[in-house]
Length: 77
Image (cartoon, rainbow, N blue to C red; front, side, top):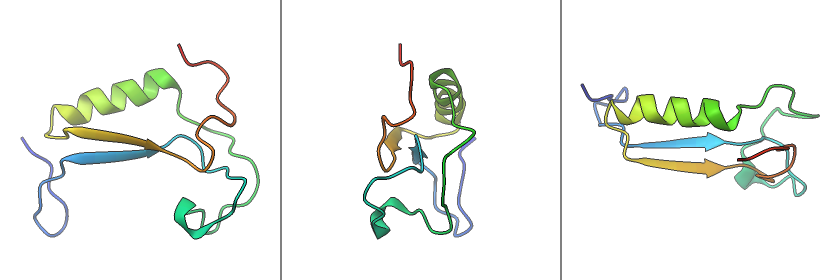
């Protein structure tokens, strides 16, 4: 089974924002409406699980993004 978007295109890539926090507050960060600290971030094991499951449905590329990707991340093993 392959995931498709609302226009019928196959979904082959996934973008996960590690954190919405950013020092620069630029438009590229996609922080529209977000102010303050992130309280619920995905753990590395959650990111791995979601990515693994979606790869079974046709996702072939996972891109990790975020304003400051390592801010607030305390333990990456």
